[in-house]
Length: 640
Ligand code: RUQ
Ligand code: CUA
Ligand code: CA
Image (tube, rainbow, N blue to C red; front, side, top):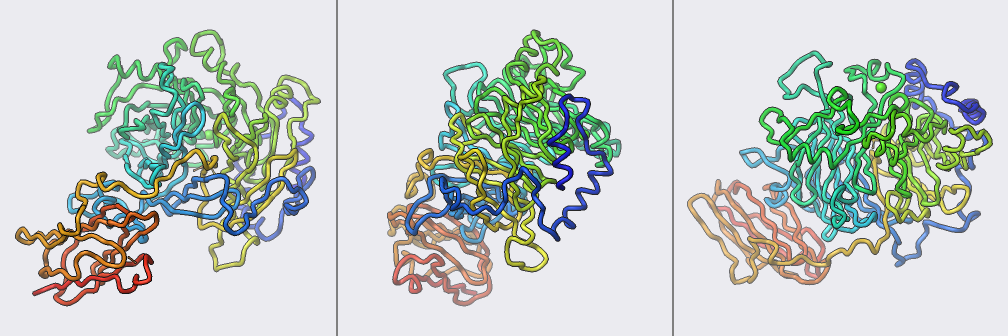
C-alpha cells in the first residue's frame, strides 16, 4: 500500500494524469482484503501512527468516570440486524436498540398487536417480513440543525422506510416504497424549497439502487429496467411522488436551502453484471430540482406504475434536455462513485470516487445556475476533482473547512481542505490540500463527525465504521466483531482514541449534541385507545371463541391473580402498566405460547394468541421491577 500512497502524493495537477483503477486491479484489490488481514498495514508517511496513545494528545477523550454522562447522542444503523442503535458519545457506550424492521425479544416487537400494526401483517395476522437490512439513518432538521423530532432509517431488502420518534425512541411508522428494489440512500430535506416559513424537514428522499422492470412483470432484458427516486412525506409517511431516472441511485444528500437533493450513481451503464456496471470511465451525481418536480406533479405531468397511485415524473436524460424546465441534472463524476455529502458551509456536495482515487467537489450555486439557464455546461459545477487515496467512500466535516474521507482500500481516513483542493484543481500546484492521514483498523466504510451534517458542525469527534477488525479483538470463531473507532478531530492531526467491537455490520450514523433531544420519561395513558385505566376494569370478556383478557400491572402485582380460558380460544390480552415512575417497566411472558413483551410506565400493549393444551401456565414478569419481581405472577388456566 505504501508505494500507492507515494504515487498519489506526488501526482501532478491536471485531470488527464489522474489514475483510475481498472477492472482487473479492482478485482484483485477486493479479493485482496482477506489477504491484507494477515498483516498490519505499514501506514506509510504521512499517515499518523494509528495507535498513537490518546493521552499524548490530551484534548478530547472517550473516557468517562463512573456516573459521568456522554455529551452526544449517536444514532446508528444496525445493519442486517434490522434495528437502530443509540449510543452515547464520546464513550461509544450502547444505550438502546430500537427495533423497527425485525422482531425483538426484549420489547416484544413483532409480537404485540401494536408493533405488528406498525410492521405490517399478512391477512392471516403473521408478519409480512421478519428480516431487514438497515444502512442509513438521518434525523429531522430545523434551521439547518437537528430538531429532535424524528429519525428515519431504510430497509434495503424490502424497500421500507421506518420513522423513529425521538421523544420515546420508538418506531411509529413504516412505509414500503412501491416499485423500488434495493432502497439504499436516505436523507430528509432541510427546509422547503419555496416557502421560507417552512424551515424544517417535511420530506424524506429515498434512492432506489436496483433497476427493475416497471411494472415488475418479469423480463430478462436488463436494459429495460429502471430505478425510481422517491419522496416520502415526513408527517404522514405517505409516498408523495417518485422520479423515473436513468442509471441508479446510491447515497442521498440534500442542500441546506431545500432546493436540491442529490444521489450518486455508480451504474449509469444500467448494467446487470458488475463488469458492465464499471465499464464506463465516468458515472454521475444526479441532482433533483424539488420545486420543479412538485410543480410538475401539481400540473398533472406524471404517470403511475402498475397498481401504485403515486405520481411518477420523468427525470430521464431524454426528457430533461432544456435546463430551464429540467427536473434533473446529471453531473459527470469519475467511475462508480460512492457517498455524497453536503458540506456544513452549505456550498458544496462531495462525491467520493470509490473506484477512482478522487473526491469531486460540486458547487451547489453552479448547479442552480445551470437550472436557471445561466451555466452553459454542467461540468462547470465541478469546483474540484482531486486525488485523495484509494477507495474513497464517505465524507465527514469539521466546520472548519476540512473534509474527512474514508479510504476503504488504504484503510485510512484522509483529512483534506476543501478550499485548498479547489485552488489545486484550478492550477495552484502549491496548494497542499491533504492535511493528514490516519490509519484505521481496517477497511473503513462510513464516517461521521459530531454535528457534521448540520450548520453546527463542531469538529470534535469523528467515528469510523471499519468493516474488518482482524487482529483488534479476541477471536470468536470465523466471524469477527467489526470495529467502530473514535477519533479526536479537534487538532490539526487526527488522533485515534478508541476501538469498539460491534456486531455486524456498521453502517451509517449521526452524532449530535445531547440537548437537541428531549426524551420523555413515561407514556401518556390517553395515547392508547385500548388502555385499561382502572384495575377494576380488569377481567375476562368472552364473545364466542374470542376472549379478551384485560389486566393492569403495578409493582409487584398484576391486577388478575388468575384468569381462565378454553383450549383453542383466540385470546387477546391487553396489559396497561399503571406504574408512573420512569423506568418501572414490567414484562409479561406466557410459557409455551410464544408470548413475551414489556410495558413501560403508563404504556398499554396487547397480544393475540391461541390458548394451547389444557393446564396451568404461570405468566410472569420478565423485567426486574421490584424486590418482589420473582413473585410478580398470574396464572393462566386453560380448560378443556
Ligand atoms: S453504503 S460503506 Cu450502504 Cu452506507 Cu457506504
Ligand atoms: Cu414487574 Cu418484574
Ligand atoms: Ca459505473
